[in-house]
Amino acid sequence: MEGEVTQHLSKLIESLNKLEEVYKVYQNKIENIEKELVGVAIDIAEEVIAKELSKHSKEIALSLTKELINDIKEATKIEIKVNPLDYDYVKDKINLDKITIKPDNAISPGGVVLISDAGNIEAQVGDRFKAIKNHILDKG
Image: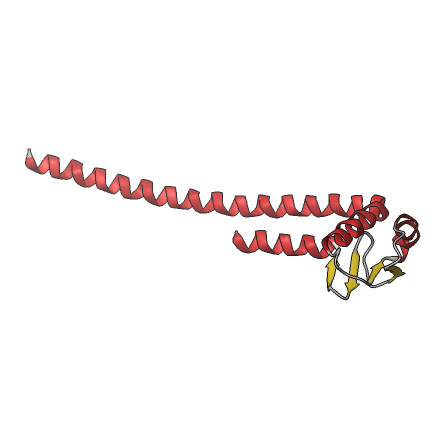
């Protein structure tokens, strides 16, 4: 009788060990699937952002410009650089004496670089997205 109990206990422990191994394999598969899904979601977001930028870069550049000007109110002289595609639109909407707006091919559509006596700020959507993407993927 004691031998049977020991034998059943041994089989039970063996079964539990096998279950734990199977659990670890499936847990690993789930983690890999999660990483793949995050990558796919990021790729989709990147495509959506690129489409929105191509359609609305002028409005995005203007919005970023206003936000940056608001962040740096204490500056007495501000130079704003935008992509040539966005230049006329932003120039027409921003009329302040202390601000000069210039087109710059180095700035991506929808992006803005603000240079002032109070500091410089770069706000390019693509760079921001890359930083977020890298942060998310590094965490995973």
